[in-house]
Length: 591
Image (cartoon, rainbow, N blue to C red; front, side, top):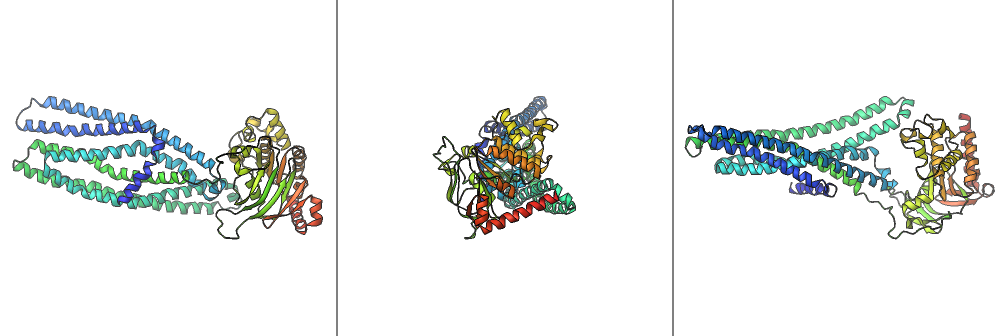
């Protein structure tokens, strides 16, 4: 149990760097809370003399004593108010700084991290866990510290009234501390499980909201509801276990002090009867014991609160401590006059979660894309085309070989510079809940209106001008208020507006109709004259857009040349292009 306690302190101690600026006011809040308790503990001291004087028949001390007691009560109330004022604001600043740090870390972590982590788990850490930490710093830590000190001071005072009464009271309360240590071990486990299950439930809600069209189209709303209900029931069961654990500790916290007071009262009355203790001292003893009642009873709630804060802190630092292997170099190089020469030199890649020895997806890719040249990358589904393009901007890092731009290894460039040299447009176009203008200029916020207009024309996204507020129309979360083709055209305009030296297109025209696709391709030919382009092709028409074609097969480039050259020389290329042609014709029929 001692190790668990040390662990709790060590985990919560990690909050200090984030709470450093808030600590002065938080500690002043602790002192204010202690002061309020001390004024409350001072009242029994006055009662001792007052009761003794009344027993002896003297009434002259009554009014001054009542006045002092009233003054102490007002001072206690003032310091309670001061404590609340002191700790209210600092906790919000700590929460904000931690949330900013978490968001920056999430932006910095590689795609491989986000592939593994459900979004609901990250969301619950960014919202509910940080909110819990803020409330613990502002309320739990302050009261837990103040109440513990108050209990210690109160016990000392009880011993000063009468050693034997104080000893009886102290021994009778020992089971509380034993129960507290036992409670910590059990509650910490169930609290962590509860917070993890809350994150899983948030993931389930997010998936249902984003996939509501699919669920409705297949009539699976009831099925999704049953899955949600099952997870919610598991969370409820865990919350009930938490509630039972807290109820058990409350049993000890309420019953044992009552028992201690009862035993002390029996001993105290006997001492008064024997003349070894005055009535005023006995009254003051029990008045002090009653003052200690709230701090003692609050330990259960505050202990559970502290353990939940520990779990929330652990969950926060699980993300913050995540290793990012895709980092900027210590001594970065610079491509001073970029030309756009993109080379893949014996590139090998294996996903981190794949443990098998033969699990490499790319097994020595060699490809050279000359400045201003456009190359279509073609291959069967699952051969690694999209992965190869993602390696160019270090969304993942190669596990072997290198990728260079104008002879400089991409790992020797700062990521910010690398991603200004290369722009990407994905098949699954992701837009943000902001205006069309902001979405298009995401990669080049300083672009001129002429650049914006040209990017829209190239991507055939003129429909944006007809939206309710034109380019300033907010398109909603993930752009779902637009059609798939409209989203792809805005995403393509975003890549073009960035004015990169190298343009990587991962089948960005898949959702377009035949006529729109033809217009986009004609416009792209104009752009691609001066821009190096690597295009993942899933249609024969996209292949025709490129100067050269690279065939990816079994993790390597097995053929490279013009479309006509490969039709003559590569049987596998003919098979792939025929498959694409069949898929395109079926798609045109469906349209």
